Length: 185
Image 1 (cartoon, rainbow, N blue to C red):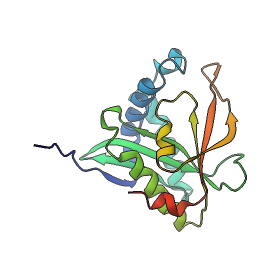
Image 2 (image 1 turned 90 degrees about the horizontal axis):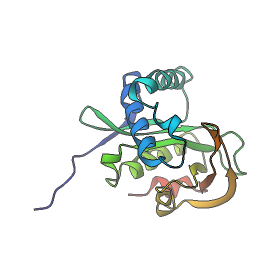
Image 3 (image 1 turned 45 degrees about the vertical axis):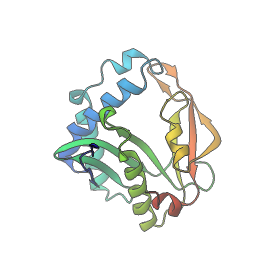
């Protein structure tokens, strides 16, 4: 007998999602970035600590009627992933949108949730006349090859934002055609 995972739903974020997003964010960071980002940053992350920040982000997104999708993936009434697209700051030439955050509950990875969040973001961005997407990933992130698997081009651009007093190398992945990204299964 083959186990079929419970289906998930992708939808636009709501203010009541802040706690669930914060929980996924904290768990994903603590699981993915241990040994990459200082423990002093990871150890204080929690649903309680992150919820107010995410609530402010959600409220700003809704107040500004942002053309950039902020999506959640749910299974039942539980948030299992999210993605937040934005207008990029200092993007490489030709890129007019960015997914600044995409995180999946570590217990729900490899179920197609990340792929679905990115594809739906691409479809919505096409609807607002955006053309090309960029995602920055920590160079040491063990999951960053996922972007290559879904057609992301490793770009020559790098940056080194400081997190917890430590510069963290980041690499850029780009999709010059949102149509192809929107069509991924």
